[in-house]
Image 1 (cartoon, rainbow, N blue to C red):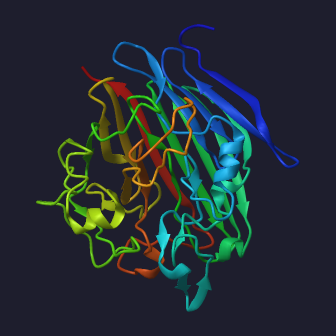
Image 2: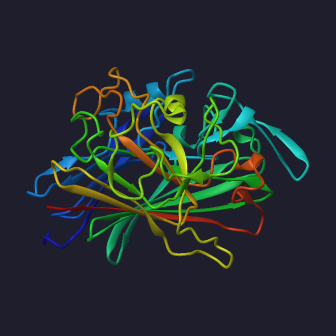
Length: 369
């Protein structure tokens, strides 16, 4: 293999009952190596070089299948490490919504709310996988058919998610979905990042920039209230690079509600896809000053949920064998706004027959001096 040839591999990761779970390896020599499970579409690891060329895994994950299986058990304090989220990313208030005059009731798994699609949602399923070897990239296409009534949602929805790794250290995630009846849909990926290397303490020293001048205040159940408000003169102003931990332990009421950051930012450069897919726009950038690693994110989505890992606990043991804890990683979840099915003033998440759900989010790893 030359230094410019990518690699694509498949290996058995374990078994859940009679079902096999596989891990797919996408690699570009001298660049990134990404490992993805067909269970939940999980990004289990992502190795990226630092400013000296030394690679480390920069995403949080479990070392073996039993960690994911235990985390997916009913009643477990689920953390969604690296998983694909659907049918509805984030929260739906009260586990209910009305569509075209019909009320739908969903199972609740976050107090009185439905979080990330319910207790047996997309992140718990084994997806059908197809390896992709395309000009300029290697990748993996995952497909899942979610029947009508799945976790209380109407309609049969067919979802395809493609991960592509390119030679310029970009990991793109492209989502496509169709439905046979009206429904709501909001998909994302829940990877946690630690650019210093997974298991190397908290991310409070990372700097973060968000291309957003407004965020969504929430109530004590983390459901948005009112309209998005300006970030100016608040701890939620990340328009210029700011350490994640600089204001995280302040007394701002919104920070106290989530134990830190767990809010949706309305992205400034979002363009509605009125006539088909649009190009991803700059959304966020994070830097680790010690390793020099930089993460840049672009998306077609109107919002990004920045979660600072407030509820991660030391009983979670990662791929490094070291325990996690509060702030061990941060998530940048490209998505539509929380509780949009109950908020007609928010960008719509309704999907109807004949329409195609499309989202593209791109993460690029690079280094800075």
